[in-house]
Image 1 (cartoon, chains in turn cyan, brown):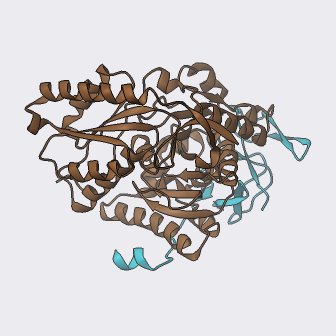
Image 2 (tube, rainbow over the protein chains, first blue to last red):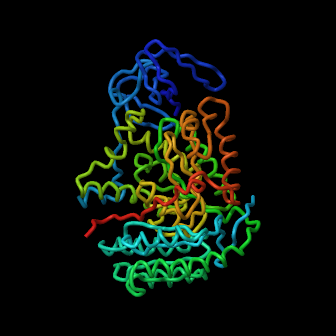
Image 3 (tube, each protein chain N blue to C red):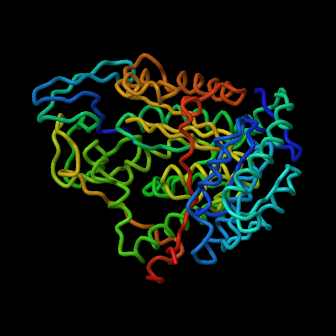
Length: 94
Length: 386
């Protein structure tokens, strides 16, 4: 799975351009809002319900349509983590 | 690859040659500290456990103290007991001495108060240090290394730099026939499915899931939202959006190897390679679990800058945050911020870090050791204080 978000290592203001090195190419993105240091920016449009992918893994799902350049965080991502009922223990014991 | 270590009679290798002054119960910590302060070459191991706990916790404390005593970084062990604690100091002493390590036990009740116990302890520890000081470092194979890991005071750089560099070291040490320990079950929440896919057997797969589920279950019994605690408001402020995101950022420390085993807190791994210690995440407790597992060194990644070491093992502090490196340099050992600014590859930083591990294994001191900022330790407790 290809990542559809990147982490910014500067405090970005609305309209700032962010560059990333991606497979040898430098790509620029414009921030649609302020993005704090360490937060995520969408590098493609992500539809409501689509996967948010970082580290090649699914972090959660978009809770609304996200545009390229948007700040991606708890306001537009649904945490879909579920306890694995692998041995049927947690639910039975509780 | 090799390093210069202290071979022990039981076949393990120490990277330090300390005499351990170990409390069997929390209420005598002052005596342990006073003995250690007076005898160069000793390290104090203090904690708040050993009494007023359920049987399960007492058994945990006992096995942890036995295995801390057996840690190869200790040349000899002096156990300090009160005389009425609920764990069994005689049993602890007997088990440690089975590793053919000189082990002594003194009790405040038997000797007659703290003043005489401190004096007696100084006398015994002095002799132990004198004997230990004759031991020399020898060339040892790094398959004998057991490395612990921890992340704490993390930030957005941790999962994208320092933890990845540690992951390279984890793969290195496993390939060399050594052992790497991932702790902090709270931190692998969200990645149990991914880790379970890397389990060496169906049994280990079950153990991984069970360790995480047990954690949830304990939280539920106390009415605590484990995920809410784990992904703290500080984490969210720092950019962590979901439990899976935090979990992956933390578990990249374990590299790419298959998980060979999940061990109980305080136990030693039975084999080599990547192992998970079923431990809480609090640094003072997680590191003790790793030291009990036989780890000689721990790698602690810290984006914001955690200063503490551990009495039993050198703890190498690694940051990927250039600001933290610049401002907290007196407390941080290793800078991998080049991964963030693009001037160094993850592989390059990992190679460099592995060399640093071998240097520390051969005697190079960590900053926490130099500043004597190592006396923060405790043992896990899962049940209530009674």
